[in-house]
Amino acid sequence: MNERYDVIVVGGGAAGLAGALALVRARRSVLVIDAGSPRNAPAGHVHNYLGREGTPPRELVSAGRAEVTGYGGEFADGSVTAAEPVAGGGFRVTLADGRAVLARRLLVTTGLVDELPDVPGVAGHWGQEVLHCPYCHGWEVRDQAIGILGKGPMSVHQALLWRQWSDDVILFRHTGPEPSATERAQLRARGIRVVDGEVAAFERGGVRLRAGEVVPRDAFVVTPTFTARADVLVSLGLETTELEIGGQVAGTYVPADPTGATAVPGVWVAGNVANLMAQVIVSAGSGLTAGAAINADLVQEDLRDAMAGEFSAAAEREVSELVLGERRHGVRA
Image (cartoon, rainbow, N blue to C red):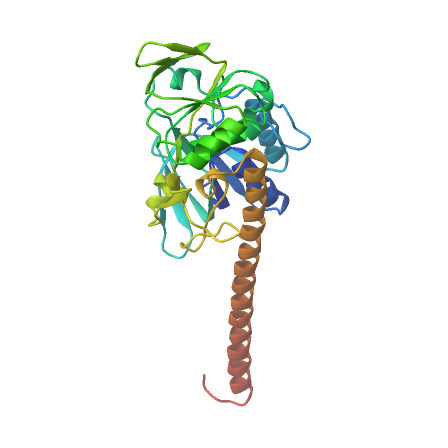
């Protein structure tokens, strides 16, 4: 690593790589620091990414890293423990191994953590038979037996949504609220059965209830709590905000403007750390937007520095001309 860069990107997923690519193509010096723990690691493929449909996540990252490197971008493997402003402008970024590096701007794309329901078997099958997003995985489990884990007021909506991919959907109430009469009618109209009682575990091929019954299911849908990986941003004085959907807290995110600029000047965010619902292609788009905004901000700073240098040079020329003039006329300087 060099001692100083125009931009340090913290996080090497789709958002970070897209931002880095825009910046290196703008001839900025860029360092991407990546901990190597992508959220979508358990998934077999990336979906709804135009032109890259079905690409394995690591293959997409590998291609992105090669593109960034091809334009002169640099990478460092490791975790960032803190970032802080430095005198004179810019930031110092400290890695877990003690290394420190400076940057004029920061782009944080650290993503989020899926906090799964405390049901045995859910974590072990996460990203395979246990799913959460129909647009990410619905096609892969089409026409299969699907179970929905009731957790909050959005459970009925979730069951109705997944019904688009299969006509064999069961809503397991678990700890979720009793559906209203209207919701019961909606579920009946779409042929969705409701099973009362808490779920004890998800096993390959079935959902085990606490009463002991096993209901055969090929796929099990759960709703995680989406928690922003915001430690680096918190170290800079930023705070996370809760996102509520349908009366239920879905998770936390870091607020930013449409370009990704945060309340701390010089710090941008992109991807899931700022948008819990963003799929991979949306995260990549937000990284590109942030990268372009950062470059525009640096252009303005470069202009201010150049103008200040021009004014300083002009002032020096005026003083020199005055001194020379005084000397020509025999005036002591």
